[in-house]
Image (cartoon, rainbow, N blue to C red):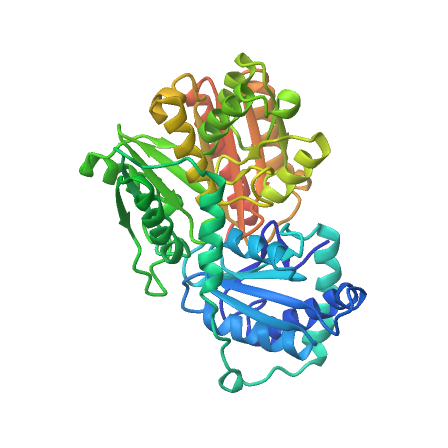
Length: 458
């Protein structure tokens, strides 16, 4: 069982284990060790690794210490600077790096940070590989001596990598222009702030458009602060204030995005999947007439897709698990309600900026508004209650919790769903219930949450 890696890399409070200086250094050593055989098989003395980071104040020192470990392990390291997570995945694959590493905690608050690793193929590492790396990390954490941070120089950022990433995004939508459109883009004071202004400036050169950028002044501590995909109502309100037709909002590392329409309405990943699925189907590109979502996607999406003759499959939460099922089923589209959308014919991982461009292109080709394209998505009432926990004990082993879950499942059978899971990136239990009867939905959600809080709460 993995102890360090969650559903999206290693994550925690910056400066505290496992993101203390010693462990971060050990991660670098362990990763270099894991990559060495592949490097030697390709005729190289050591592996090549590319780094990217978000805008948190801890990201530069974590990048320095991680680089020190990688170099000590025999790796050659280059830095792309502040760049979205999917940009690192793209660059790793394009330039033949053995791995791409991102310093980011995505949607978490600024005090947190994380380390995400992509293979040379631009995809997240399999669980087994992460487990093998963990074993080496623990060994090095006990035996290796990390250098003093003040003695570790910073890598020079190669800004041309960011330009390459922007060019690749534009190549995915060669006909897209923003002529006559008024758009608001929320960059969450994160990695998107370094790339989105350039991207939309290039689109403006293609054919006009009125684009307003908000939350593009990161100070190290304002990432995700009442902005970005974690707070989509912020961009929705800004769309109304500015009389725009659409809003786009990214999370801290820009691997996902959400939208807002002109009527102060938030459009989540389920709605994006519906639009994209029908568009791919119309163009004969939706292989097998299937879409892979997750256990968190609303029953309303499943019903809407079914009306179009499309089958929805559910994977475990986490875009890595969505991608695994997509590969098994040869699916052309998958994603999460949170805005991670996977277009395997265009990219190896979820990419918020790519998703934004694909949706804008879809709107332009259809001649419809985003509201019109999602009008028949009738969402079942859904509630998610997050409970902070001190440990992640199997819930089925706790009688009081198991009884509340069983009671909810019995009553809602056929008219709703009960999904209880631990977050893969935070010390949280997530209680999700959706049902036709909103009153019973909230009753059961609150009851299960209180049972978990009583047994495991902080």
